[in-house]
Length: 381
Image 1 (spheres, rainbow, N blue to C red):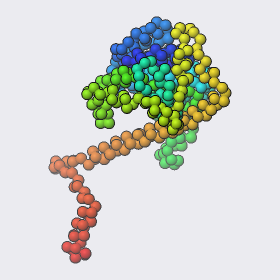
Image 2: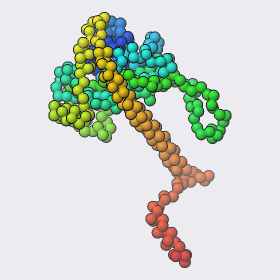
Image 3: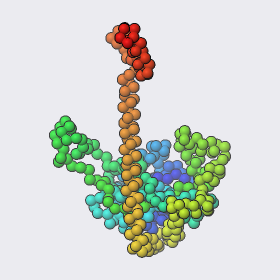
Image 4: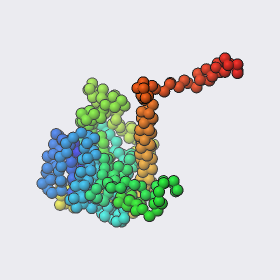
């Protein structure tokens, strides 16, 4: 499992203990300048032999791209079979045993497993989060996460399925284009890329705890401000609240009250889920202790129902996320095309060195009026 962290002391120990009980053998953790005690936690587990600690300096953009690729390739060098790209506030839950067993059961021909994601909602209070945060979204519809087989040339800038690929010397796309219009020989025999084929099964899901209490919320906003995440126009209100000392007001709006929870359950978009809380509480303090049963304790009826629902949520999330990704790529391509068109319309020099630019095109109603006046003056009205 790879983790890219910065100031995660409130949740890092729980994340490592939980996933070690789920069968994760080694954590490759890249720290990006933590100052809150995260390094003490990581160094303790490093002495236990289950954490490989890397320190990565740089901006958020640099760390997210080069840093993630670096630790993903390091996992291959250290002999991992699978790599789970995780965040400090996310917990992978297997519906068919534990995470290690689930990945080991994936047929060799598949190289990437999609894990749908849901969020536990924020609640008032500041005590340890697992006891208080037991209500989550009913469906797993957020952009999914992914685990993949290791590869020496893996490349990613984000741990989502559409952002993970294998670096290729020849980026050609076999079997693409319209028949007869490719301008060359038919490509029916070209070898497609089989390195990271999606597995057609969804036995893993991700439980996300983004807001765990007011103290953590305030620290998250302060860190976001430091790295420039509050500079955009749509986040000016959050920045103003931070500067004016009003974050408690924002948190009061974010954290759901008991009435909010009851209404969400009645309306069907919230459910109570104590599986994670109970599993984490049963995780042994000693790394050699026996893990809790987790989903092994479920009835077969519940397992079947949960797998069916997660499969639908996975297909929804993939459909929406891939479509949105494609739309963004098209928008980016359109933006480049418009910039090129504007560049072609820039003033140029003729052979004499004089500057010229195309004449401004009048609006259509004005063009119609001037045309009518011109025809009338020529006697052709």
